[in-house]
Image 1 (tube, rainbow, N blue to C red):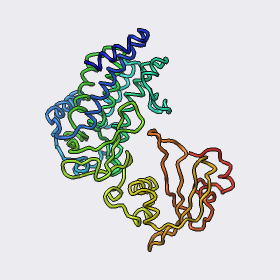
Image 2: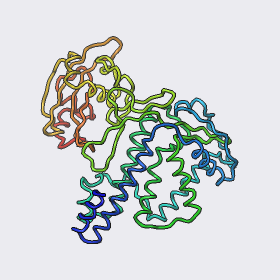
Image 3: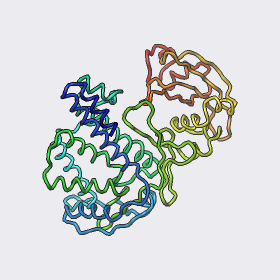
Image 4: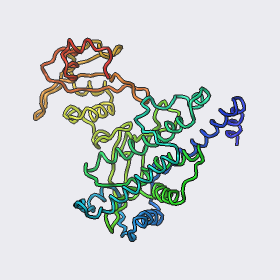
Length: 398
């Protein structure tokens, strides 16, 4: 009650229209918290509710209830899925394609009812640092909810969690629905209805509730004709708050083990929101780091043990260090890497990213460059396809 009284007291100090927007914002924040709990929920799925909701979608297509097959992880589902059906010109569409059409047409109608859909790429700056100050300064409640509710949940559900899980799976998943990791879509429409109060036609409201039930109750699912494969929810999920945000955003992270574990033991690892192979977290070594071709994985592995510890353990020899003309205030450091049998000789260029991350930090990278470079600026230019002289003329790189 004290928090509510505090909010009302603050509201009395501002004009009535602003106070109304602030009250709507707090209600939207509660909605965001509710759906973020569903996105991160662990433990057994509500199988009955999930099956009934999916059967309801089949019924909308005039299809009978499918046979449900439950598995303990998305990886287990991949072993059961049949090959994708062959589409024939003029022939019937498979059930999974018709469900996709059902979902996309519903979203178009809901966008129209709730005032249109702003694509995430339409805002690149991110939500304002202080949402209440933004509202008092004239920011519309719609734009704040779009950015501070819809975009935040999309990043948590799609980029941080589902994106990391997908990185561990084969590239070809076929048509898949993410269950709890599609909760951001439902939350966005609920937030729009909260703001505008637009009633939905009964049929659309009923279909939206089917999708909401799946998001609240189950994990990933694959409809395949008369059989539907559904994965259980994770048994454990480890996250950390995104630093420097006022929007309760989280990302996958676990410094000592997997970030997500499923009931059958299938697990994925993440370092501050970035997917990494298990060795980065559980057994990082100099040999593995220097042999790794993926710069993002290499960055995370070095951060895992610390840059100075990596330099010391690897016995790196400093070739040269100079101010980075493309990133004022930061240095370029060029090191000679130890030689390993079967590994192409290279040198390591330590750079600081020119762009600031959403958490306020700047990532540091160790870039592999050819062993004939002795000048850090020449090596940096090579990484951009430029000469050292051309790189020196950059005002700011990304």
